[in-house]
Image 1 (cartoon, helix red, strand yellow):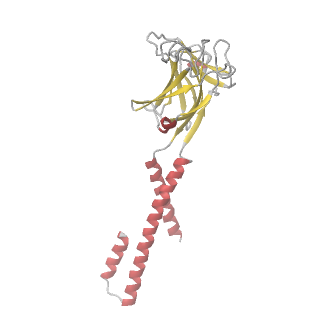
Image 2 (cartoon, rainbow, N blue to C red):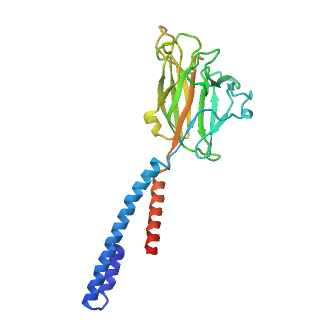
Image 3 (cartoon, rainbow, N blue to C red):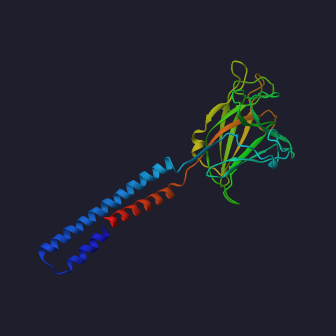
Length: 288
């Protein structure tokens, strides 16, 4: 409308015939009206495009299933079947990035090289592992914990959310309650932690443990620099109700199918949408 007012002001200062003057005034009103409609349509289209990109093409997502080969050179014992305090391994992440997994012990007397986990397949010979997953999964043992994330440069992280995952308790032979333990996710962003705790199911009618899919709910709406996962073990039936972590060597769990996402900042999407639509309008007008 600023352009329309400028055109009309210049016309008012020029001597011309009444019909010509009226025609040009009507033309300026039409230009102003069309410009207003164009800017309005660009704004609405930008919002729609930003929402569409954010909901579809803009969202990066993948599932970590531990099926990609693990480089044994990054492991102290060179075997993903034996993960110890001090190990680190990698799996494909988002947008060509690599996701690191660092298993560790949080025990007060933890030593470098202490057993904390393994990458397993199917049931176990020496533990009560889930039986409904014949493919690879990450097993955290003896109160072991794991932290995972994606580097985005030497001193920064590529943020992501955890939308869901598959998990199971891992027993050591003791009788189990209907809720034998819990798994806790602790997401960290700019040094601030957010915690969510999820119950693990007990043995089925055959006395076997199974993976179940856990949706993270509100926790999954937040993006983090990195996420910790660790377990709580509940006592055997009749031995109390206090579930604990890092103190019994019984807080063991299996983790698989970690669904992660990254959504680009809405402001960036909107700016790109406005720029693209505006450029398209100019091109079409010039062509016309």
